[in-house]
Image (cartoon, rainbow over all chains, first blue to last red; front, side):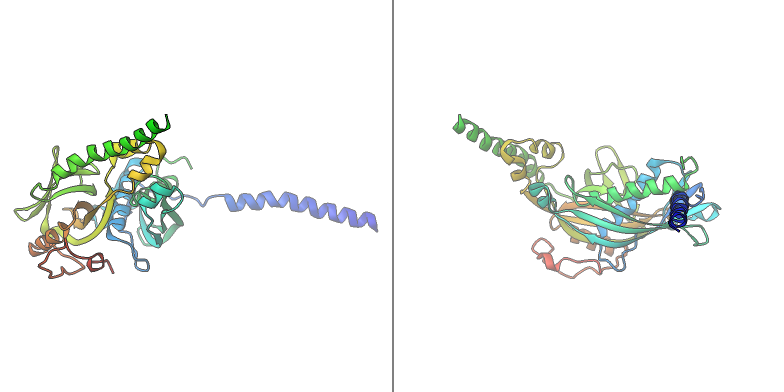
Length: 173
Length: 177
């Protein structure tokens, strides 16, 4: 009886040990990336969160600059650009502000630990028909050096990397 | 020995303070709309300082190396706000971080108030652009009024305050809804 119990436990353990990595592998595997030759960036939306205009513009402009700098897309279109209408494999980036905390550069300089500025943004990549292909929450922050607007640069770098890794034609994914 | 190092610690920030204050004092009375373009204008480097003017139905920003023009009718939004910035910034600001006895931290307490002017405009292809300028306190609101009177649009109406924005308290400044 004891032997049967031991054998059953061992079999269950072995089965579990074998299944676990396969399950993990299934979770970690990225969805099949849809490559795109061009990306269009829409203006950052901040309906729920009160975001100063300079932050909104800085986010938008930095995002476009970083996407152009990263490369991988033939064109980076702005919101409303007519030329984007004819692109078949266009990816559109919608960004919505979910959280914003304006810190203080003075507090950062004086105390080093206080005065952090952070922005939480929900990024949604859609195809031309508006069907969502990727959604991710990203964060931009400035903790030590620089003005408050530097948080927008931090976000832009992360978002551009995300777009490049998932959609750029020459990405290494 | 202690006295000498204390004297050095005091002289260093004071010397930097005086050195940096001279050009800023010299720049203040200059006429026109001296502005710093933080980001947004095509063909102009970030943090480039220049002159912001309204000429022939267009908004012009001229630096020593470039001149950019934006038709006023293409300006879809003009928003002003206020902010502050370090008195010692740029290379000098970085150098002050190495000042002994926390001198850099002390100097970072000195900040000057600025006005920010944010515009949104469309290019000829319909692409949406944004540009951010900083300018001396009290300059942004009159500039916005002039922009709107010449055909620029704004989501926040211009306040009819003939006394100008220089004496305006912070609470009276417009805020985006």
